[in-house]
Length: 164
Image (cartoon, rainbow, N blue to C red):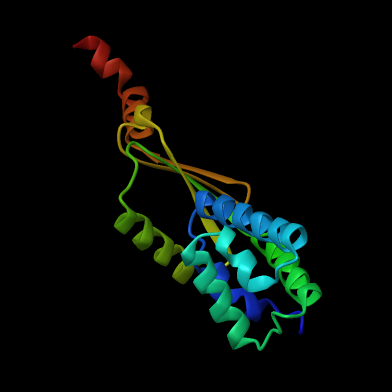
C-alpha cells in the first residue's frame, strides 16, 4: 500500500465539520480496538461501527486494493487515516443561529472551491452577534457581525446621537 494522500481523499471529503471529525476518529478507534480484541478479522470488526463509515471504508479499500485479511495493513491504513484526519485545518465560524444541514453543505462547498479541500468547519452559535458572522482561520480574525457594524456606526456618530 502506497502512502499517498489521494488514497484517503474520498474519506476526507466526507468530513465537513469538527463534529464529523470527532465522530470518525472515534469510530476508527472503536474499529482498531475491535480488530485487536476480537481477532475475528476485519469484516466482523466492522460490525462495531456505523454502516455509513463501514461503507466508505469498504469502498476505499476496494478502490486501493487493500488486502483486508492482512490486519497489519488495515491497522497501518487506519492509523495513517487518523493522522490525516487530525491534520485538517479548522475554519471557525460564529453565527447568530445554527445553520441547517443544507446551509452547512453550501458553506463547506464554498470553502472547498475557494480555500482548498483540507479544511473543516467549526460552527458555533453566538446569539450576541445579532447577525452576520465572525470568522477565524489561519491566524486571521474577521468580524462581519451586525453587532460590530452597529458598534462602529454608534462610535462614528456618537456625538450626533448624544445631541438627540
